[in-house]
Image (cartoon, rainbow, N blue to C red):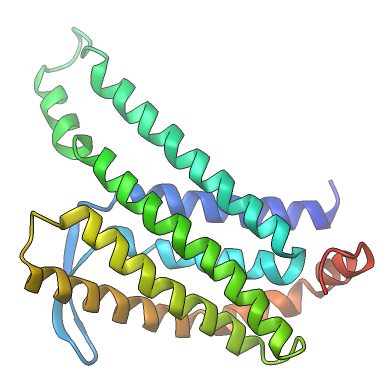
Length: 223
């Protein structure tokens, strides 16, 4: 397999793994102190999710908009597949070799995952497609210069919509408006920090994979 294809496969694998893990961990929370907002409670699913934006930005830069869009669509299909398998797992009777309490534990862990994944998918579709389009908007506007601007500008704006949508869909009617707003603010500040921290990795990736971008240019895939 050519390096060109191997890199795309690797970025796609990291993207999809981060997406699935983020959906799986959405209902566990942890406490952390964040700049500007203080002590907050965040979902563990927020930890791997920003990696998906780094992956789509790298794919956008190296392979172009069409491949980035294709990756986003595959992520949606994988999420739907995950919902299906979780429901199958819930419906299948527990083996006689296991304690019946296993079923209760399964439902406790994954029973609300459908709503979580639906919320994640709604936010995911809006944010990821917006991220890809903003990335290429900034790239065209700056004539391919200022990588930091398109990397951070696209991610930081799309993450705002992602955070707002997923928390609203997931917890509207469960949490008070005050708690919802606090969770949105906390989640967004955390994602802003991560977006800023991943900038060096974006530069490193583009530097190490300059041959991939060159091949895409030769094929007329990227500008």
